[in-house]
Image (cartoon, rainbow, N blue to C red):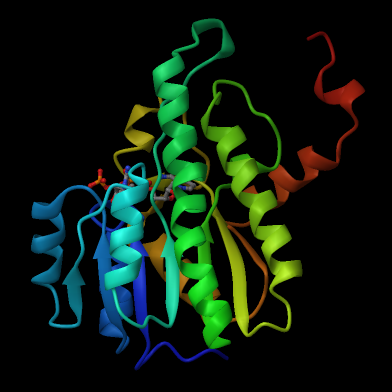
Length: 241
Ligand SMILES: NC(=O)c1ccc[n+]([C@@H]2O[C@H](COP(=O)([O-])OP(=O)(O)OC[C@H]3O[C@@H](n4cnc5c(N)ncnc54)[C@H](OP(=O)(O)O)[C@@H]3O)[C@@H](O)[C@H]2O)c1
């Protein structure tokens, strides 16, 4: 069991939704949390929740800003990458800028942040990394250009890092949630199975952070259905397509 109390976490993507609720839970659990996102006012407001929360406004699309933040943040025990962007979009209505933005925030932004933190963790011989993925990472799904592929890339990255960092003292896990009630899913116009509150999802992430297990998918049984679809042969999945 990994202890949260007494640790210092850098939580990126904390101004809204899942990250915001997770920051509160971590602080309530005795951790110090440095919260990042672009919206400084929302971060300040979040820091009112607890003295254990301090703010570090950041745009993960800006490499120089990420470098400065990582160089000045001081010693941290763990990193949580929760920044995310989502715009539902089919390949028949391709919006290049929106797709690039999703890719940049969901995946390349993680590369920027990890590139500036993992070497510090490796040198120190300790570090705890949680990447917030998505169940959409498992299969290319309709209407998800940009989002699904960036989450798949993030998952592949996590898998590689788990191999490479074994024995280094740096632990990497990925947490793949299903549908969460946030401003992102407000864009969906379909019925979302097992839609959960941001607070309930944050509790699941916190639970996963206390374990060494590589992957946590939730909620069940929706996550099982997604994994089952992944196992189906192409001739069934793409029948008539
Ligand atoms: N909602 C769902 O159903 C769902 C399902 C599976 C996975 N997820 C994942 O869960 C994570 C949180 O999503 P959410 O639903 O809580 O969405 P959200 O409420 O929109 O929160 C996204 C967070 O990412 C931050 N962010 C976006 N662009 C950023 C940038 N360029 N630099 C720094 N921070 C940035 C946002 O802050 P600013 O706008 O202030 O920068 C915000 O704090 C994402 O990785 C998302 O993909 C969500």
